[in-house]
Image (cartoon, rainbow, N blue to C red; front, side, top):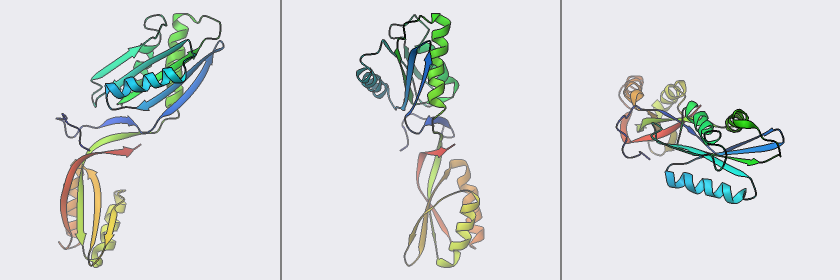
Length: 217
């Protein structure tokens, strides 16, 4: 789950949790926006081609994508619209929202009336904003997966401490009890101390792995 090449282990970045769509109309032209999570330039390109095939009869299928936890790779296309009136405004909306690993395609069905450069910029950026109004997003955080082993007498105290922190554990019940939890890396030591004190040292916490995990907004 941890991605290669990340040097800043405390880094957090915003991601789209699932595909979202939106549509606006401007002087009888329809602007249909689809935004999807992607994790590579190849995945973004495949998504763009998919939308072009789906809306093969449209006048334009403009696109933009942002790849990387620091928005390292960005691309955009006006797909026949006047330069800078479609892809760039779309990209600026995605970047401005702080989104990473995301691609957007706005399909235009021409309504017969020219919009002018200003009108096109407003329409393409507006279509992306409309789709994002229906988006589910989360923060990708760097964390630690911990296993908490304990006896049955300490279960209630541990559940209480986890509940105060909003942590939902995976529980396994046998002769003893174990909880699997994921917490931000910076909170692991404080949690360890709290649980150790609350159980008089009867609970044993062991680190399973370091991972990136999604915290829903």
